[in-house]
Image (cartoon, rainbow over all chains, first blue to last red; front, side, top):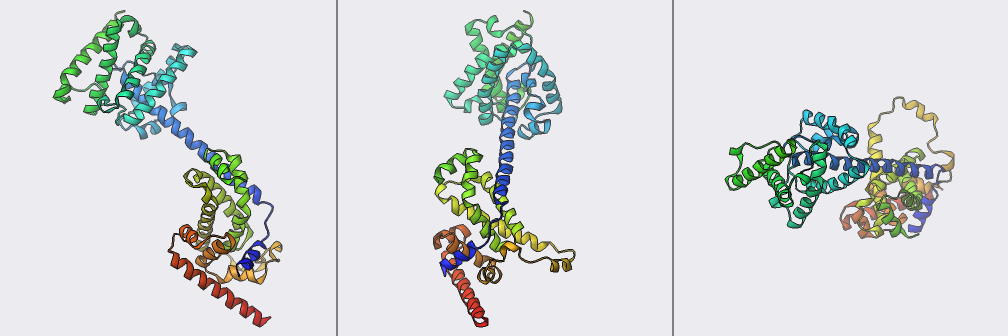
Length: 228
Length: 175
């Protein structure tokens, strides 16, 4: 009986188009898969954009601008991944786009993107709804890596903000303190769950002193940059 | 053909490798689909749909050695989905269908036996018969593909075989 059944089924004649239909099906799947990869990359970039804007405490600059619609899709797309994001933020970033592109040389721009990639993955792994990282929860090795990136990327932010480089203005010791202050600032924002400078009475007592100190130092650097 | 190697390549997104692999099974897919849908156009649609779905999901296939079984499962699901979909479509003017031949020229070669396989058996019986005798799967594999208990696979198979035997007897009587 079994061989007979197989023989019978094999009598079903194969049409010529069968080959073509297999190709069509695979091609359609391929196109969709390619689309989803692009979307994934865009999502990562979108989050990085937000992340980097928060690193700059004065809020002066967001080179995220270089990631306008063509890179991260649309405002809705960004909104989907980071909830606390307004149209105003988006337009602000967008407006900065041309400026950033014009201000950085090719080599510097490439380096900038490379550094950004590391921040992207950290934000994806550890960032809260605003893209802020509570560094006290991040493994030590990774915190060190992010610190290293911030060390290198901050002068580029300064340049994009048309400010003198903080690294040049500060002594090595002061620059180290500056990066630590940025980390404290971001950690506090993550603790409070805010996307802008937190009100002092919202900050948990145990970190308040550290935050005030960091905040004062950031203001000091900022003033130094403006006056130079 | 090294199926495992081609599956691995396809899982990395290599569509050319997947086409080579898929074409090895497209005839089986077409014939299985035909037993359910009983016409060339729908069976071709199923081949295309299985190609699409399987390449899209190939990364989820953990054991490349089960590639064929996995493909047959997708084929059965696609065929049953299409049948269910067609059931919901009410022909606007059934009279016209009388003028179209039920089977096209190339199908004339089909013996009464394959026709009876298609006409007499219910879908669940076709599932088991095809997997057992056309794809050479074991009872255990069939029970995994169809997600039904082993005992049920066996009882469906015996019921289906009985039906086919009865039918061939009747044909014999008339002949």
